[in-house]
Image (tube, rainbow over all chains, first blue to last red; front, side):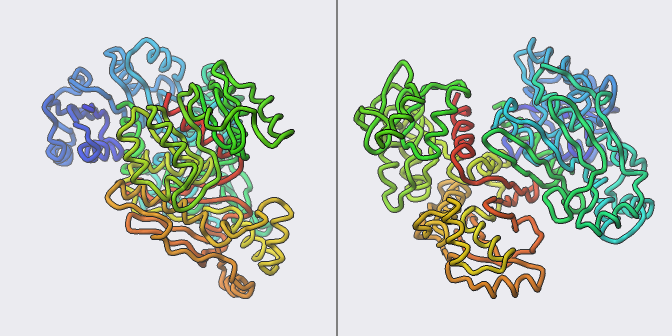
Length: 315
Length: 315
């Protein structure tokens, strides 16, 4: 397939780098300030070197990438809330041209699910977004396999930064601020960590899951979610939990009735108490029972794997 | 799709019972002594009641089911070793008629993989066998998604009976024979438990995994596997392990170089130390990292879910 990669953060970069080895060709790559468009195939290494040198992935206009010759648009710009722009317009541009769109960006799927599906219905192209929930962990593929209608709910740890902070607080008896600073030093937390530690990121993933489970009968956005983060969690809460053989994790829950995210007590050695930056999802399904899936829920190469699996399904 | 269900144990029964709710129709159902064939659609409840009453699923000849009007043959007869009969011939009959075959039966995939793939190449039908490894746990779908060529190996607990025995021995300090008798009372172990406790069942699943990873470059059968069971494991070994924060699990390992199954020390609270009859598989993949998948690896309804997911992929 010919790919237009929009967004050159860790995920977009990895998709572009891996595309060739998955049998695909990048015909356009764009960030917010530049692009390289080449219908005979972009020299990905050169474009990424250009970005490292100049900050832009090429000298073409980013808008040219949307008009380029491609089969699948890869939407890997940062997740934005509310109108989910500019990601939403990128996906719209692809679908209106009857091209496919594969999203790593959670925004359009969490905030404008109904519109996205409506655009897809009017297009010969399809929308896929497995990479937006849990990176390489096959959460959405597994829900599809067992049938969304047979899944009663999904719960789990869906943000690696918050999980790292809670794991470290529990294991070392350290305070939140201390561990957060450490996580920032390690690059596990961003300079502004609010998206992760306030539960927004986990909630967006759960909103996407709820939208998939509801299958159009209801539509959810972030504003429908009940979200509590870990910022105000005292170390003493973790100590009390440990005395009882339990610990605290930031747990997201999605059903076709709604979304909740917040710190919850879980068994210290149970399947939800994953360590470090790992994520885990438990899918409760009729017949199949409870399936637990864990792995790296973020990261450029990991998430790129899910993007390219989605591209493969379009083939 | 029109289904011919061959084999009416727990899996075949559940597939037949669920087929309608998954949008399929059973046009033939057969066990070793009888069949019901009806191109307008078998009355599944009546056929299963007939089996409960008489021991046979109908008064037709089982051979008639193979010649029936169907799109997908579901091979759910018991796993046999060596020539993998009669399952292999059932699948061959389907492929030679350019029909699809979906296997829950491990035999043909573990013991005659090359022949199976050769028959598939000469047929307009496809062979699928996700249900043969790990029941409802999406082990093979996940390997496909990340790409078999990018998976370095799979390891895990792939037999629930052996895991139940080891879990109980460790948790209660009971001897093997005592726990096995208990498992037999509960229906978790068969009267002759050797297939499970000697590691054969786990080894067959690993052989299938190795065949998938090797992708035709090498072919494995059970005779290539190094297999050790849990029959001779003394309770003292579990006690010693526990003193060190570890426990023992029957671990299967598959790579494209080979297959090993045997009791192994694993961290007591680690992801491989699943409890009771649960199964778990760890897939190590380039880019995606380590993915851990756990759930019910056996059981009629659970495995039927995987069979019907395979049927859905043929649609």
